[in-house]
Length: 425
Ligand SMILES: [Zn+2]
Ligand SMILES: [Zn+2]
Image (tube, rainbow, N blue to C red; front, side):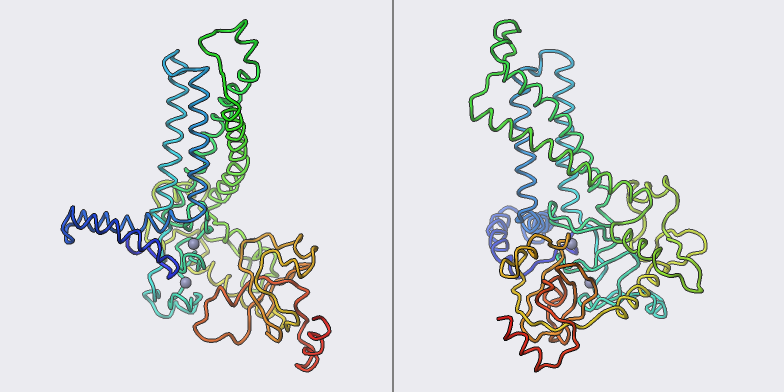
């Protein structure tokens, strides 16, 4: 549990809160008690993970939908009115329980990290791997560095703001089960809320001709809250349902979102004389599902089962080739207009604001005269890495997107850059 904790300096408020709870715990158990140690570690993990907008909003949404559904359903389908009512209520509560259980498991179990300073047992094999300068170690096959977790994550899929953690090797199953239980719960909730709202809007008809025992009578605030919750439930079905569909498609191929992108690039890359690229982890759909859902086997570092004609480093070698290709393609740009790293830089024009890159990758602040190696091009945005950044500077400050209008391709001299910058300002 302790290994998965990573605190940033910014979280001093969280640490302050934990200190208060720790003070209370000290009075309950002596500090060497294993229960104390476990509870204390969990407290850190709990406060750190929960004190973020993602889990807070997710909890609010789950609470709104659950409360509203139970309130309205108890009016037209009370718990003990029939066997179908009991089944309906229990099924809904079961789905809410599954959603919360898998949500917290995905959040607290975490994806698992590559140990700091890690290298394969056989040092010769290091040449097949990428080096992470932030974790001061090699990236294991399938691992990637997460800038938000500030660690290399085992079989990283993506960083999910809703669980304020990465989705990876250890929590992939829990995360996927969280998605499916949330979708099923919200489908049932949408149906129950729709029936309740229908009866609420036709309350006069039910009062005259229906069963008086099961009238849905809502005040204007209750009605507004129910309509809001119904909208939320439908939104979850569509958005989370879409995410679940994409996740399952990838799990069936034993790919993560990042590996999916690597495979697309590998297939479209002109193949060398070494032969065509074979994705090494696709063992057939049933085996692939087992890899994720029948508790992830192995240490998540180098012991991944692979298909014939591949070796444990087939994917990492492909990644190194793609990195070389990217390096060869990069172009140097000079910054002629400063940029503060804003996501909606109004001063750079409305069209720049309206066509942002569809990615939550960082935006890098830049000053006039900075040099940037650009590796990705969009019509109004560029992605690149600042050149000659000081040693020890955070990766977050050196790589990211910035508006295209702030840069010119490096064919000009420093004097000309100053002239262009003056003209633009
Ligand atoms: Zn790393
Ligand atoms: Zn992460």
